[in-house]
Amino acid sequence: MSVAERRRSASSRRWQQFRTDAVSKFRRRVFGTGRAWSFRRRRIASLIVVAIAIVLTAWISQSLHAALYRSSVMTGWTLLSSILILFAISIRRRIPILPLGTMSTWTQVHIFTGLFACGVFVMHVPAIATGRLIADGWLEGTLSVLFIGVSLSGFYGILASRRLPARLTAMGSQPRYDQIDWHREQLAARATQRLDSLTSVDSQRVLGEFDDQYLRRYLESPLSWSHRLFAHSFRRRRLVIGLNELHRYLEDDGKEVADELAGLVRRRDELDTQHALQWRLRAWVAVHAVMSLGLVALAIMHTIHALQFVES
View 1 (cartoon, helix red, strand yellow):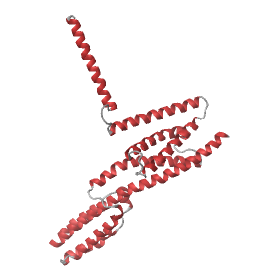
View 2 (spheres, rainbow, N blue to C red):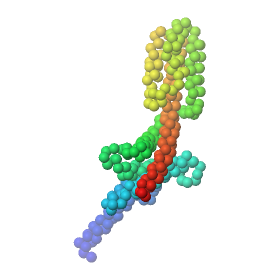
View 3 (tube, rainbow, N blue to C red):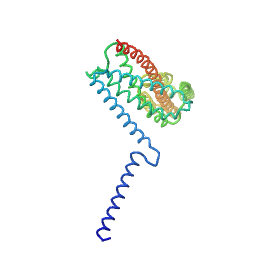
View 4 (tube, rainbow, N blue to C red):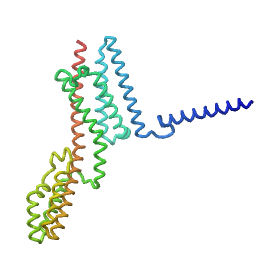
């Protein structure tokens, strides 16, 4: 073998090795060959599958329409099947003792089936082609509103189920939802006990007036709807600032009690925030379930009505 032939052979081997390594690296990155798929890789693969399913459904619908068939019948049955699957999955998620796979897997199936159903809904409702999301007719219009409401609540649930538990964990101790009112009562009782323990007349007068005007109403009031929906800390900041400004009028024992009252106010604000976050999760589950039940019922009614129209 000549020198030129040996050089060409070595160059060919290097190129073949480079190509093999590149293909292997691509397979590991895209398909996760040789190791378990990460959550990100599974999510990307699921989105690709949903996109392909939506495109395929749209192509079939257009083909049926071009052949003068009722493409709405196909998209309608597809949408109804997706809704029933979503409802069945929601029932499965609420019965975790059944040995039918992990809850994480069922949740992911629920999410991506819902995305597919949103795509089919756009194809099925003729009003969307004219720029309106709500279909004509009271039954179809109500069904459209329910579907959009369930979809929006589902998107909110995706965000809430990932962010709210993390916020609760970051806050430290998490009292049970049904015991939060008891903890509030304990804070109010502790504040009254500390105010009664004051020995300085001036401190009793200053902190007593502050308690009558602001503090007691805050500690004994139920959770406000503004805090329940937005979880703000406006009242806590105002009360803590007010207690700090009272230090100039207080004796040493009064300053100590004022600092402890500020701590009680902060603890009450934490309880209110935990209550609000837990309430949001519970309210979302209830609203999503009720709307889903109504959606299934109206979808079945709409299917029966549409089949009578098609047969006639």
